[in-house]
Amino acid sequence: MKASLAAVVLALAAGAGEILIRPQEKAVPLPGGSAGLRLDDYYFDRTLGRLVVPAGGSGRLDFVDPETGSAEALAGFAAPARAASRGGPTSADGEAGTIYVTDRTDRRVYVVDGRRRAIVSSAALAGEPDYVRWVGPTREVWVTEPRERRIEIFSSSATLRHEAFLAVPDGVEALEVDAARGRAYTNSGSRTLAIDLKARKVAARWVHRCRRAQGLALDEARGFLIVACGEGRAVVLDAKDDGRALSDLLFGDGLDIIAFSPGTSRVFLPAARSATLGFAGLSDEGKLAMLGQVQTARGAHCVAADERGGAWVCDPERGRLLRITDALAAGLKTRY
Image (cartoon, rainbow, N blue to C red):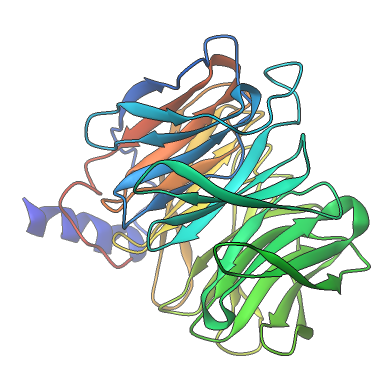
């Protein structure tokens, strides 16, 4: 079975055309989400073996078991007046079971002990937050503040301490950390910026080809940075060299938060307006090839990958996640 699947993948890479995958979908409701939730930036925590999901409208942080689909909710964050508003917990990231969560309602960044499911501390932010990222090489926490056109930097400890601002005059959208190269990446106007983590300065500006650049996904091992364009394009940049565009792919309408699965070399592309999820393979040369697509839900603009290569797509209007798997990802590690 594995050999035949690998042959199919190689045929695709050689230009045999698109394969219509046969995905399996399961809806996983989130606690208190029946009226809708503000879902945005979430991730799979390998230490905890859980998806960590800021459920904005509920004022909670949800821990979802990818095996059973069961969800535990941690309360204690600020809840907005309306469940589907911009407020509440919006972004999460972490390391070794410690989770950092931004909250738009009270403009704070929280430290959570993921093992105990407990809030440890929090710190005030100087502006409305969007993305939060743990920066391993410098042991810092970086938070984007788009309205203020900057990144706020905190030292990491049980009690976060403000360290600095990093100005991004042309705007800041998305944030990915490349520990292997000592850089962070963000989209800013017509460029994607590569920021030196230690110097806290822009090291390079790369053309991303987007009319409106949105999310980012990183293949750290091979040095590829994937940029999502809101108009429906994904572009692969060479992060290990000069940032040149290696390939691009047109798909759907309304791309925003995308994800990469290292185990399957799969790029997940959720298109909110066309209510579809695209599955693309990423080759060792940085070439994207579309494998297929599946219907999702209106407004499904965000996705995360679990350790088995499954895609977890947000369905904000129904306050749930859609767990989507396919035959090529099941039990097969592929290189396209």
